[in-house]
Length: 310
Image (cartoon, rainbow, N blue to C red; front, side, top):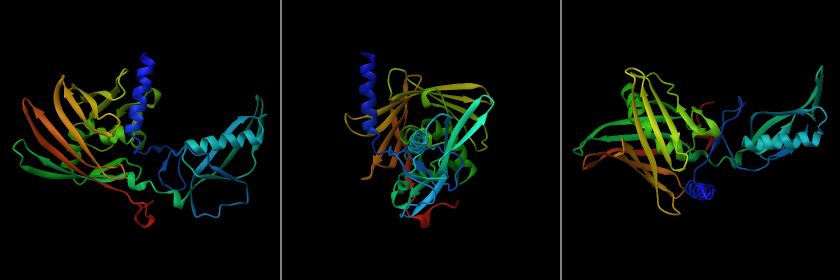
């Protein structure tokens, strides 16, 4: 029964997150274009042949196997690797190489991954910048914060040091939209068992370094415990994050509790493309609930003329 319940939850969460994309990690690239998982088997082009479509070379893809394996099987392995790494096709260097050693030998095959330019239609799903407006408990507006992200979706910096510290202290531990809905693969985080988000690495200098750990609930796929450790005074804060979702609909927000008491409510606004274009974060204290943060999310472009510098 528990397995059945978990399966049902998995289907619900997968349905809710259908509009999100997953950027895949690839080795060092010939071109820094972010790749996404499409589930498609890449085409193979033999040596001295090329596609007629306009394309970008992405990175070297290679596989190896026991020396007895046939070339056709190596090609199948190379296609599986290319599918996992999000390429449209692979240009083979050759038809394989066999290396004999004292303990036997290996067969290798490699090629160059390519992405067709007309299939690069997903960059406008990736956050480029977030403008965050702040408010106090009386509803008075405070300073605005601008957060920048590269075209792999990783946070790079804030407009100033004050915004950087606010990002790490107040936004990053509870950023359900980017950490969970947009998939951790888009970020520079440590991944734990079964590719679950384990610990966030803060790459920029902050006034007080913090370790932030997301801990998935074993029974509910939409619930996380969050542990925030302040390395300066060794005080540990624990929170619980749970998605809010109407049946059969996209995730419309999340509730965050501190010591079982409501702490923050997050609400998401989607556009026709399924992107979260705006967010409202409400803070709770006692019986009072007020708008604390308002996010305006901006995205990268599919137009090569507007791509970031390599």
